[in-house]
Length: 345
Image (tube, rainbow, N blue to C red; front, top):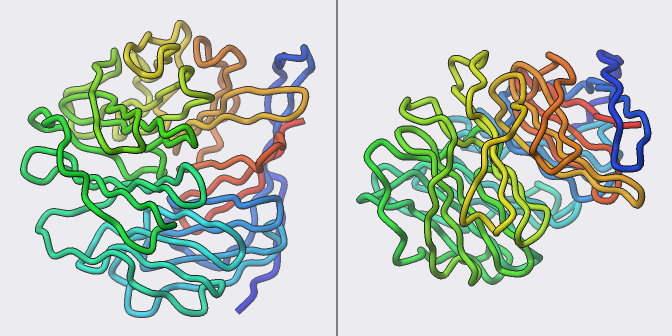
């Protein structure tokens, strides 16, 4: 069933100098999805094809830039929450849920039918994020099982998955966050990163497509179950950014963003922090400009120097954001079925 667009311009934001010394304005245009689901999974294939997923088994797809949405919710999964989604095109997508034993589902016909691609009866599994480096290679991560993160690899576009046999042990109270499907970063080079939170706030990193892993400490806030790193994004093999904070105390902004220039081996705290807790960080890049955008339930910020300094944009909040490839535009998703087109100009 298709749902028509209801567009309301809800926000015009700040002026900022980009890398080309241009003034930057940004606007959110909220779209009508006709759902009240909490949406934390979001994937942008291109300007036309957008997928979203979330609570009550909800999966949505748009093939016209968000002007209308088709509800392709997976039958029988109403008790699941699909926090993670990846799409290859308007017909092919995969979702991972937080509840099993059927965790992973894939469609090749635009959501008309779904097949189970990962099933596991291990007690305690809770998948937080899935990320693909390219068309074939993907990673998925669950909260720890037997003292280590439960990490899956695929080399065949998610049709089959295998568990990574050996990872560094987690610290007591360390976990991942399923806040925005961005606690994994994975690049075509085979470099990958997984961010953690809770009693520890560390970054696990791999140089071989997730086959082996090391772990580094960060200066990020830690110590509470709701604190730590919520999102990681890398511009290339060496330059990366992490953001987070304390979910239930979002106004606290000490040590909520850090950056690296050595591939995640060491991390430095941002000089100027985002205003509040942020659950998602993403790079935007066009022919002439590039910058980093962070967003959370209480607002958003921008950095034009690789995450060293942040400038507050607005208190308009969403859980997650993805850029349209090659454009200074994207989509944000959040609570109560909210999806917005985001335009930087």
